[in-house]
Length: 289
Image (cartoon, rainbow, N blue to C red; front, side):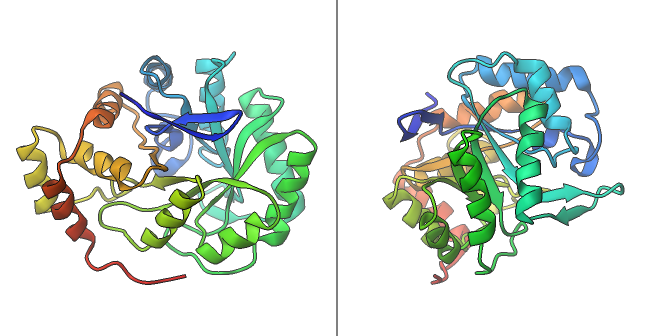
C-alpha cells in the first residue's frame, strides 16, 4: 500500500511519488522518445494511486510540464505537483544556474502557465547542483518565493540541494515542507538532514534514489534482493521508505512496466537483518552540519 504523508492541512502526498524528469529526451533535453508512452506513464501513475508528481520547467525545457498538462489536466483533486526553480537550459542542453529573484519569479509564472494552474502546490528552490552543496545564503532567493506565496501563487515552499544551514536560514523566512537532495544507499552524506526532516515533519525526497544516470551496483544489494524475491531497484526504494517516517521517493521512468515495478516497492517490508546489510553499503556516516 502506498502510504501517505501529511505535511500541512492542505498537503498530503503519497510517499511513493513519481519523478517526471526521464520523460524528456536524452540528457533531460528535448521531446520524449515515445510521446504516447510518456502520456501512458503519467496516467498509469495516477491510476496506481500516486498523488505526488515531481517536475520542473527546466526538464526539457518545458517538456515534462506540458506532458503532465496534456495527460492529466484537469487534475485529480488529490494530485499534488511539486516543481523546482533555479535553473534554465541552454540551446545546447547545458544547465544554467538562474537564481536572481526576478527570474525565479518569472520561472514560477512559466511553471503555472505550462502546467495550466493558477497556484502551484509546492515550489522547491534549487540551491545546490546535484552532489555539490555549500552554505551560500539562500535568503534573497527563498524570500522572493515567499513573496509569491503571500500573493497566493504558491501554497508551500521547499528546497533542493541544500545543507542544514540553508534549511535553517530558509525556515526563518517561511515554513519549509520539503527537502529534495541526492540520497540513496550509496550516497549517505545527508543522513543528518534526513533526521532533521523527520523531527520537523518535512518530507525528505531522495532524488536519484536508484543511483541516477549510473544505476546503483552492489553485490550486497543484489544478494538481499534475491533473498527477498524482489528486484535490486525495489529493495533500494524500500530501504529509502523505511529510512525515516518522512522519507519519500520520486523514482523516474519512461516505461509503464518499470513504473509498476517501482510502485510495488511500497509494499516491500525489509527485515532487520536485510536493513543492517544494506546500511553498510554506504559506509560510515560522516558527521556534518
